[in-house]
Length: 425
Ligand code: CTP
Image (cartoon, rainbow, N blue to C red):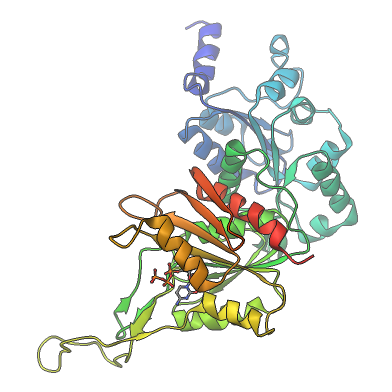
């Protein structure tokens, strides 16, 4: 094989797909190894990926790893592959640039508009959305110099993610952990659907979001539950936090998901526990978004021991209505116990002989008295457990907006757009 054809075949790995062009920039931090999972996620979903590490990133992960995972050559400086003018071309041709991990040094250089390696040069030529996923020690993240650089990058139009809070290299914990690759991928995908989906419009706001389904115990091994995966509530929390809000996510039972970065996560099981947590965290909040699928009924009595077949088996299971948390919030606002908190409900509806999805949803909005109702049509392969969603957004002021089919993150960004004007002045 000639050199030319070998390099063509390497490049072909991504280009044959004709998918969106992603540049993954990798800074020199220990979290560079997590960039491998991200690159893989992009290539598996049909993207053409070019990895541009800094020289120090290659101290952590070898060039061969990034070349094998992306199917493309990897360079760090502007003097490799000069006839291709990669320092101009890679940025110009990119549909999205994702920097993970974005170190303090890399963000400082990017904020200054330096072009001293291939990655920073690429950042200057890119006109597509640029997403930075920071990773560094808490002190470095909190340092005024870094915070000023982050502000500068945001002012220049880049999206700089809030880092996660948690275990850092060594024994210390705090803000500065790289958000999970799955979360970076979700936000990158959102930017591909809608470039302006992550504005910093919720800074200084406190938002409470519920997610997942409740489980109402029947005995020590059984419960009444529902099919909610929690994906929509997690997407809302993730996007709201990256739009600058201080988010408390109260989660019932969900599928296994990465905890959204920079979000306070509270776990609950039953409707009663959910209500207690919502009532506590709603005080003083700017908004409460009830995306959880709350059980309407719970077994009236919970057996202390496993219910057995045979003698003593129940003929029927008696159920008791649970409290309506959403209606309770609206009532608390009417009574003045909650001041100016915007309240958003969700409705998963199917049509029936009494009316179609929207007819039921309009009646529910009137009954619940919330400010916004997000309506999803449910049924086979819709809304539950899948990654996409669509529906309508009904406002208490009579406005109705169709929510086009897209990712749950896209739906989240539309809901947050509609929430903005309802927040207290
Ligand atoms: N909800 C709640 N507390 C409950 C039940 C529901 O806060 N006990 C909230 C949900 O989180 C959602 C909204 O109310 O935001 C609508 O939930 P849904 O189950 O569709 O409404 P229901 O009032 O239970 O009406 P339906 O008779 O259609 O089940």
